Length: 273
Ligand code: MN
Ligand code: MN
Image (cartoon, rainbow, N blue to C red):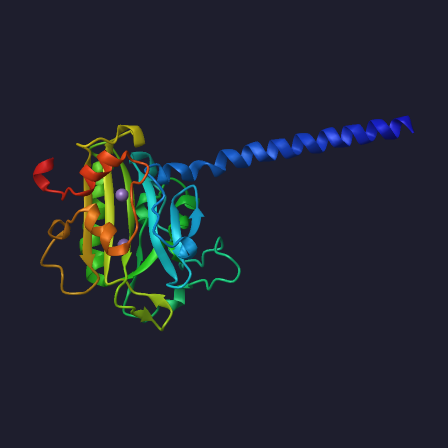
């Protein structure tokens, strides 16, 4: 009897240790997403069509009716750029979506006339294979025209890379689509009329408490059509205010109200640099 009691006590101790150990390890990896929304989780008046997916590599709000993200939000600095080669396989269904939600698959885009346009760029997550593959979930993808994806959008992605790698900046980036026309690929995947991107430019290591009225922000709204390559991305700069009005989301809502007001009405000019 006595040895039984000792055995049971040992078993309980062992289980308790295991549970607390696995909790602390999962806690460690599960807080990595927080940096991607350090300036606020974008919200609109109706949260029923926002399914938030949190990953160590980015955070997004998925719209199960549109079958695309409402927005994707991610932190970016030099440390995210590495030597991992771009994943060369197909894009993936997002396994973190709820069971009853349709999961967009690679072939849904095939022959649609639209590129699978990354929000978090593949090259922006090249430290590990896991990081890179995470950008290939179709929840991180919007249908973009070739001219947008391969020219203007890419040019701004190059600019972000140079800010991080050459100028050692810390970026907080939010991107997504503007959907007014209701166009879809095969009545399934919503096609944005234009795509927006908001970039808050801080110095490496900086975060929420460093945002002030002079903080540089780059906001663009680019048409999702072909025949736009005569202009570069700077032609499509706008204010965060105008993006907020257009899609109904409030960005940077953790930033002090007065500072938010001041930086959200700015339109990026190259001479800011
Ligand atoms: Mn792209
Ligand atoms: Mn705001």
